[in-house]
Length: 79
Image 1: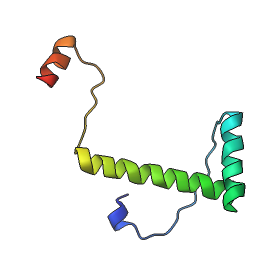
Image 2: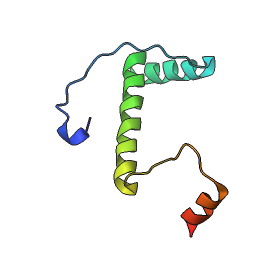
Image 3: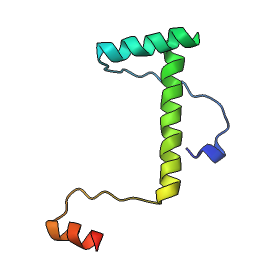
């Protein structure tokens, strides 16, 4: 979804996360400090991350990461 074409409406999805205990504790602490729910904090972090990826994509253009390459391919790419 392109943020320029986004209607601004939220779409709810159910997600199962596997987090370290310390990570969960920190997220809960953030939520409490902000007066927000854990879901709101995770949603905000997720949206910020995706927006940053869009900006990075715009700055760098399309980047293709090959599944494998030879030593010669690497040498050729930096010349």
